[in-house]
Image (cartoon, rainbow, N blue to C red; front, side):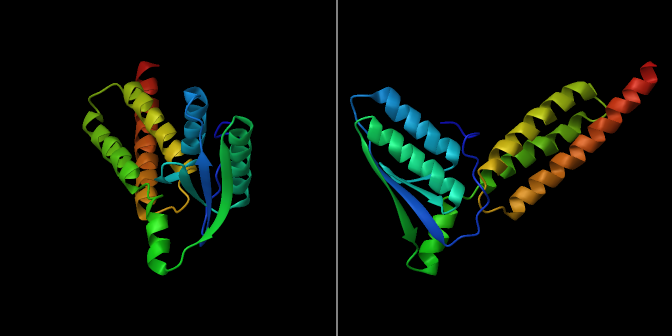
Length: 176
């Protein structure tokens, strides 16, 4: 059960899926596999044994798979369709999936690289940007409700990558 088996889809839904599970305490390895799988799916923790995802066919398939796995390993689990009772509850559910802080941290890192332009080795900056691109991809894979923070981080990353590409080309031309 990996993220690549069940890539989450972007959601603009008002319906949710809740996995309610009782995990066996005598098998900590199994518990950890389930919890890591739910984390890789981007599931929000409502409380111990209760997890939430936006309702999409892919998320339904993934949670059904997790519930089946739990059931086959001496636990029990149910996937329930949940509807928010109010706009406030809907907002509360969506807030559980807010990735803005992670995007802002990434944007801050990318912005800080500007200090090294013209001073540091462009290939070193490029390696850091590559890691930041990977981090961005990981965050956005689990971002069911893209925000302005995502757009900002993506723009800053693309701009920095363009500058560093130019620096690398310039360095190659100087060495030739």
